[in-house]
Amino acid sequence: MKKTTEDWLISAESDLHLIEVILKEENLTHLSAFHAQQAIEKCFKAVIEEFDIGIIKTHSLENLYSKVQNKIILKFNMDLLILLDQLYIDARYPGELGLLPNGKPSFLEAKEFIDCAKAIYDEAKLKCR
Image 1 (cartoon, rainbow, N blue to C red):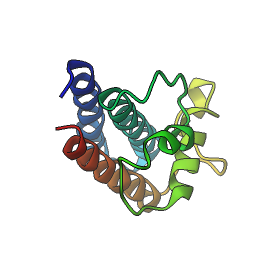
Image 2 (spheres, rainbow, N blue to C red; image 1 turned 90 degrees about the vertical axis):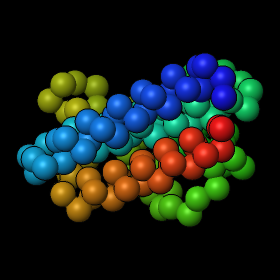
Image 3 (cartoon, rainbow, N blue to C red; image 1 turned 90 degrees about the horizontal axis):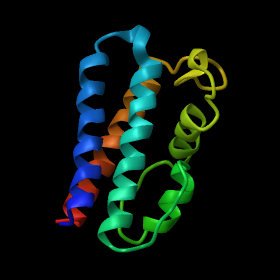
Image 4 (spheres, rainbow, N blue to C red; image 1 turned 30 degrees about the vertical axis):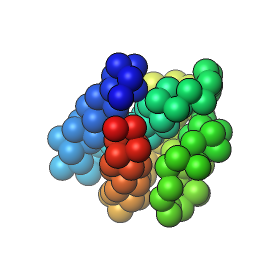
């Protein structure tokens, strides 16, 4: 595994660890969802780095996934990536950080985002060994 790939995965793992800590607080679902987006983005960028797919300057999970979909072979709801993109890309001000169009994600929505992030992390780590 390349050093840069490892760095991306370590950073993603830190986001996942933070989610585990804050998930206990239902009023922080927006932050756990935001960090799920960050973890997934970092996993995709780790795969891009490891397989020399190129320099991709975007934060869009949908765009990043299109570059790694032949490496990250998982079944998940693509709508989750679109929603998570809204958490990061569309949130331009601190008060909007991690908010969906209808406000904070529910606990169940946040849990779904986190489960998706963990699955993508596990697959990225496996593929990049």
